[in-house]
Length: 278
Image 1: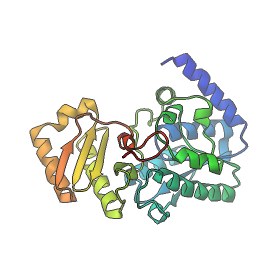
Image 2: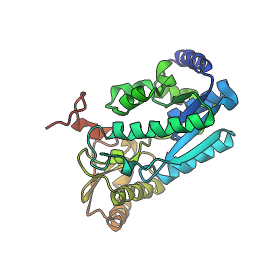
Image 3: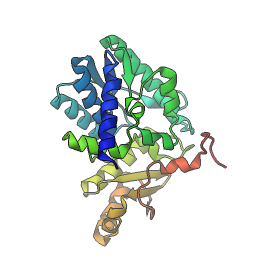
């Protein structure tokens, strides 16, 4: 990565943000949205606010961290109920589930923006996101949500670098998309299953793992951890504890994915057009 190029892109981001009169940032508490929120605050001052969705598909710990991040910086922040399980079609978990979710989410965000007198809504999508299957981008385009990080051509590695330079605690935070991403397309999403996944992932995080995903395949929990943590999870004593806890949670079998953690691994089931493969 070219540090000078990253800094030039950050200057470009500043110019993009300066063109806005007021902004609501869709704030998950992750690396990208945290960086965008802080940059917007520096450029627009009090004319920036953050909004975070809260529901069964969002880990409680992530919402708490988002609250803490905004509070420490004195940024106006609202946590609102997003209620994805009530969104038509969401529970069936079709390949365009993310589109259905984001469409509903952005409608709520624009309602909040209007109430606060903010003329723009932005999300923290970065340049690298364009390489993955992201039906939520269509919802963003339809709603008029802007993506300043993409406009500035900033990728994930550059955002982490710049966040570290700025002293942001989120600079090395692992990606943590919503819990609905743990289910193969076509597998119905229920509150009970979401709770199983959150409890299982929380247990792994408590054991010191940094990057974890528990993919829900019916009675089987397919565990993904970072490649550097594969040896740790194979420890006989820890492995036994994981199996016992996962069975207590409700899984009958626990499988370790030998490939390790892969972002968006379940998207292999869809083609570039978003159609499910046979």
